[in-house]
Length: 275
Image (cartoon, rainbow, N blue to C red):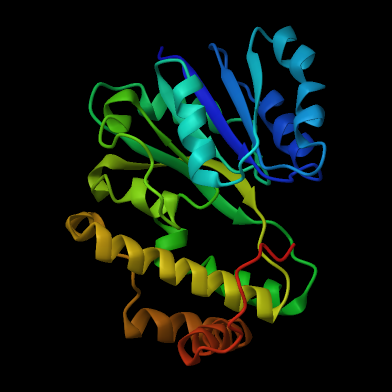
């Protein structure tokens, strides 16, 4: 079985890192595991909170390593984590994600092959507080790209042959899109185990995040047009949208309103996580 490293870039994630690491400790994975938290530009106690979990990982025979970078930035954190990671499978994990217990073992099984492979779990949007975010999430989760694909949002994994497809992470907005499009649809594997992904709260933050997502995809198309050949079925057709809209008119109305606000250029604030 391939060794496995989990890389967690974390910027001011003191409120989330405990639950993220607890989710890793709950895994039924039986093999070796290296977890690297890369605290970057933190003004809180993210790194100290992570270090308190080192004995818990050691008790399972696993390694938890906490790296601190003065400079904030996810791409720099990802590249630093890669430089620290042992050879083997790589799981890239956002610090606000919670994993179901069988996800790591499922990813390792899917990726324990010599051919290049990319894998992810079933994305489940964590319960939102605001009605608008609940309606948006309900509709968004039914779109084919999310319901049937391997989105990479918050979590993606590659085996050694897959990681060889690129060198360092480039300075791009959407690192998950950049990695996902290194692989065609036949090389992307959806593991039947879930993870909770938080959605931002409220209409304004949804518009800001959606705008940033669209900008990230457009950046990949401009800088790496050759990757678009691997996109696969990403946009639902009119008949699919009509069917989904009929089944959830309020969700569709919310989703459409956010998309329209993005297109009209409203809410031109800098992106924030909104949570």
